[in-house]
Image (cartoon, rainbow, N blue to C red):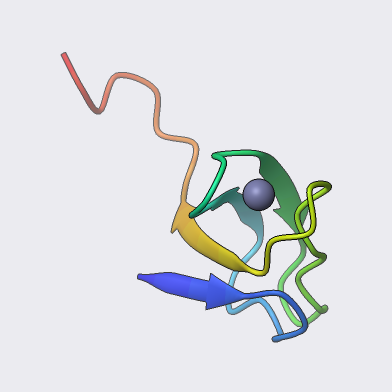
Length: 53
Ligand SMILES: [Zn+2]
């Protein structure tokens, strides 16, 4: 699942830049900010510790 800067976040969580893996935090219903390095595409991931072993 991907997301773009400027879109409304469908859920609260952290988004990781698809280009540089920088993390931004978005709140459900609010616009997703741009990556600090100017990228606009994100992969959405949740904080799920222990998902990978
Ligand atoms: Zn980036």
